[in-house]
Length: 400
Ligand code: GFB
Image (cartoon, rainbow, N blue to C red; front, side):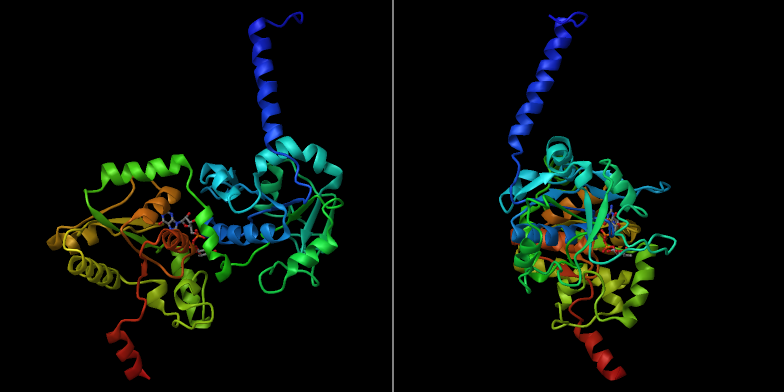
């Protein structure tokens, strides 16, 4: 036995070594290479849209996608917080579609050999200037928040930049870009393509929406959502409602007068507005519109399913849940409104995904996450103020 090391300590060391070896064996090196990126734009809904695009991109190039942590912003904190991908989603479920590895595992078990500090190159379409506007002919991949904290979480520094534009982009669906990427960047020379931002569009391309079925909540989130439904909602069917009404949203909706689409609005309007036009009511429905939509849905369900009537409403919101107002409005129908006791966006989403019916905000990518999950399960979803009600349509006609 080694001098000075107790037998208990030695056993502990042996166990740790054994576990690490097992993990190394699980993550075999992919000779086709890897894709890494920083989910540096927007909050959860934006990042989820980007994720589906990045997943499709990695799949098309036949490289393994390094699953980035989710980037979160906490009030009063100057730097973003990186939350491991698997805190919210199952890694195994994604493996059914394409090759993936959590970033923590890649950095711990593969990066030293495959992507040593001297090989770390950041990829961007074109130069990014520094925050103060100076041009350095670089991607400046660690300039600003969350760029710095994201890469620094893994102690990643880049030795140089690679501009892939204008000859390459990430539209592998329409332009067969995968062939060009693989021709230009041989995995042997470029084992990791690390993007400054997501190799994907926002909102998600229509062709990638179906990939949402591979995003399955972690056991922890599943349990929290199921426990709430079981223990805190009245027994019976419920409508899940997403009310997006914080000050950032009110300001964002002011832009609708200048644009045909905003954020996730193609999910109801169609990508070329073939299913409708954007209105302020769709972006920021009034209390009256919200209640009218819910009452109509409750009535519709009552007529269609005499036995499975709505017993409650579950409200998720970034700001005003309108619980008192909804309770007052729905009292005569004996329907009560409920919310989570704490602010928990992911559990809110998981509950909305399981509701018997869902009414969301067509413009919000947070609502879009729920809609995609429900579509994958064959569950129904609707949006506030969409389609435009007959009476409103007539008013618009008269106004013209
Ligand atoms: O997810 P997200 O990109 O959706 O950003 P939108 C909104 C964030 O607000 C979420 C919180 O990630 C949550 O942190 N949030 C929104 C909620 N709704 C809820 C909710 O029902 N429950 C809880 N707990 N939290 C757009 C962005 O947000 O907002 C744009 O896409 C821009 O980039 C715009 O920032 C102003 O698409 O709704």
